[in-house]
Length: 135
Image 1 (cartoon, helix red, strand yellow):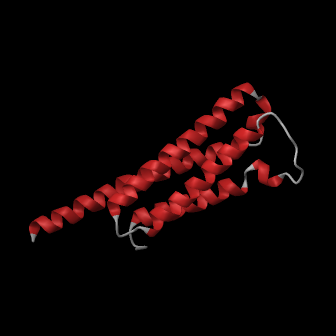
Image 2 (tube, rainbow, N blue to C red):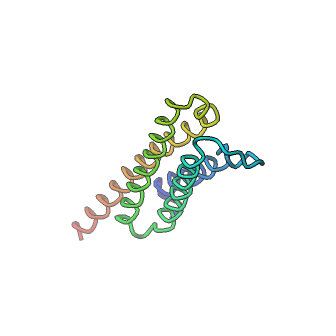
Image 3 (cartoon, rainbow, N blue to C red):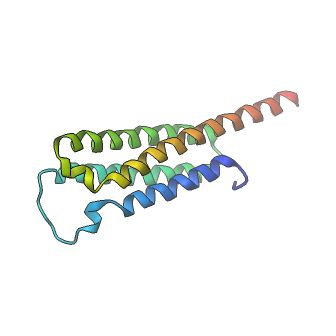
């Protein structure tokens, strides 16, 4: 399990998702302040939690490679949607982006990690199929 490069990629994605949750600004605020984009904050927070859960599921399904590819693709979609939501609302509210710059970088890095993970899983599937063809 740990000898494959895609497992290391998936472990990195779990760490990145957990760091993204740690640096999320609504978790660092102690007071309940009502501001205009609190609903969007909750939606982005839920997307980040879903991304973390999908990363963990993909990491634990190391024997089912096709399921890993599907889970990683879904995770890329969720991370991209989170990235687009943060960018979209930062155009309307300039203070929205101030606290989320770290999250933007982590989300973009996570999408790259999932892309590399999918690529290496596909290489692994191709290698296994070629070995089975030789037998």
